[in-house]
Image (cartoon, rainbow, N blue to C red; front, side, top):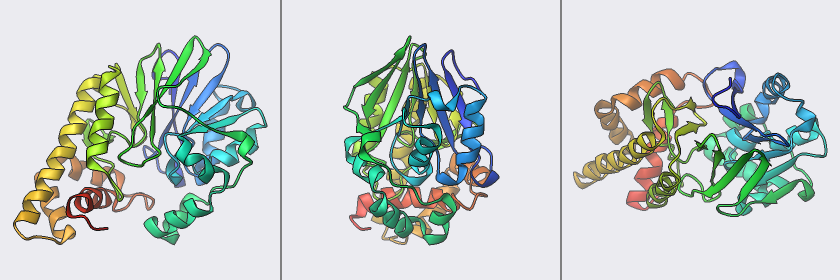
Amino acid sequence: MKISSHIYQIDVKPLGYERQIAVYLAVGNNYSLLIDTGPRCSLETLYTELKKIIDPKELKYIALTHIHLDHGGGAASLVKMVGANTRIIAHPRGVKHIVDPSKLWNAAVKVLGKEVAELQGKPEPISSEYVKGIDDYENINLGEVVVRAIYTPGHAPHHVVYIVYPDNIAITGDAVATYYDGRLHPVSPPPFKTGLALKSIDKIIAEKPDKVAVSHFGLALEQGIKVLERAKRKIIEWKEIIEEQVRKGIRDPNKIYKILLENDEETRYIVKVRENNPLFQGSAYKSLLGIYYDIVGEG
């Protein structure tokens, strides 16, 4: 689906579920750049959709917002499918884990559980010549189209947001929110850093994007700054709810999650429409855990 003059949104439909993971293709006069690939399990769908827009073998760059399985798990495999001219771009901290994903895989199994990790698919290793780090505020010129990388830690220390010009759309990965039908909540599973996440959103706001497009799921309906400000407020709201319950002596995150759901219609809605996919069951609860552990110093 074309969402602007130079950007296509692709639903990679992991395990056949729609509106779960979006990736984005920026097409310039000279080159094309794909932002995220989704997990390895959805690679065939991605390749099929790419062929409807470009010749996949002419794809120049795969730019990862971060290296978690549901965002970059298919990157190395896609390079092997499309040919030797494609390069993977990522935060420098993620490069070694793309080249050798063994530690990434072990961490994913620990955090997600073996069954969910295996459903997403184990990332393939790849030679370091196909992977390069990108600097904060570095521009990638595609010819007429420029993609700017913005370091945005919080969700992960290796997170990068990409702003596509002249369309002025920020492709935000998991740095801003999970967003469905005008509702949003933080993407904040452990180890989440609340302060860094808020500062990262401020960095995006400073770029004044016209629109925001998230990974889960799609182009936000509202003007970009409005979405970013709402996302900041939602993180703060969750933090305040958790802190209030902790002050009352409630330390069981399951009980706090129940209270949060009672007070947050947006999150209740997203849980209902999103967590039918086994890849994302319990994701809102895990997002609460990240802020909870950041507050209480556990996890």
